[in-house]
Length: 220
Image 1 (cartoon, helix red, strand yellow):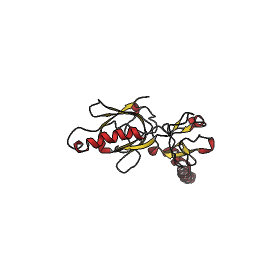
Image 2 (spheres, helix red, strand yellow):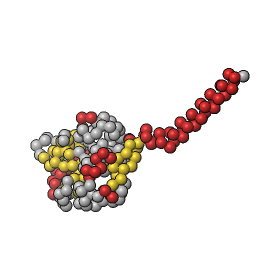
Image 3 (spheres, rainbow, N blue to C red):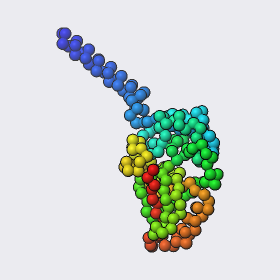
Image 4 (cartoon, rainbow, N blue to C red):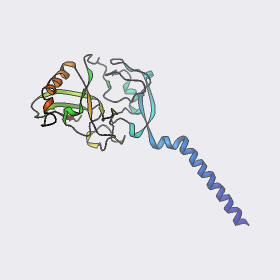
């Protein structure tokens, strides 16, 4: 009789523990396991605007969607007083390429696209915020050094590192969330015109010969 009652009590305890475990997973565990807190914009921020604490928030994001150079909560205070280097939409993850020092950014800089079929060679580890040097296919003509504002796949989705633990070092990056198609860079109009002029002169050769742009990462 005692053993039967004991087993019943144990059975009830196991059920209660299972229910408690399920409740914890649904209310807290899922978020802890699948997300990580990052710094995001609480409101839209215009290019050249000084960053204040009221513009920032810390919010959990799915780990698979975290940008490789995202700013972590431990770095949030360092952003106050800095300058937005580009227009930042509300609820955007803030990355190191978006925020600069207190000097006013060059007003002539804009984000321009390097189309996928223009790119002859590039690393699969390119990510938002990286600095690259752009050359022609023979490496005898340089178009300049630029900061990457976006890295997109064919569906125009941002390509990020699968693991948020990899950090910004290009040597520690593994697989990305997609295959890189086009890259957007921050540059002046005259610099982009130089790239556009070169590509226009060689557009007929892209599919038949080794013509296009070589993007070389600058490891900083």
